[in-house]
Image (cartoon, rainbow, N blue to C red; front, side, top):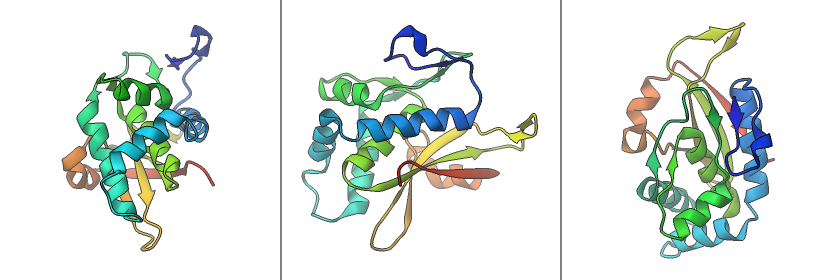
Length: 180
């Protein structure tokens, strides 16, 4: 089951795997990048940084998310995807939302778009599992492109400071640009 909890209950549909989740995440990020709450929060997070220090902006957004949310798995048989605008408003009002990897990746992707950056979602597999011939991915994270160096910056809310170790365990990955 796939559920957008910040939408009416009619948003519950059958779950079809990572491509479906990524499609929902892309649409939500593109829509929410222009949400004033998300832009306002991103500006507030980055206000002490030097202009055009894009790497520091992306890392500041990641560290803020780590500090102001907590990880919680989705319901057992439901792929729950949180609206990034709602998460921004909750964090701005002092709440600490419980989110999983897709929610964190979605919020980071949206925040990066809102500050003018280029971001992708990366689905990763830690084992060689297949269903009906399709690889099964168990995790999603965000990458951002540093525009001058063209360096890809990996931003993983779940792995946090253990991201390099997590990346060494990846058996397969697929990149999904959020917006053109």
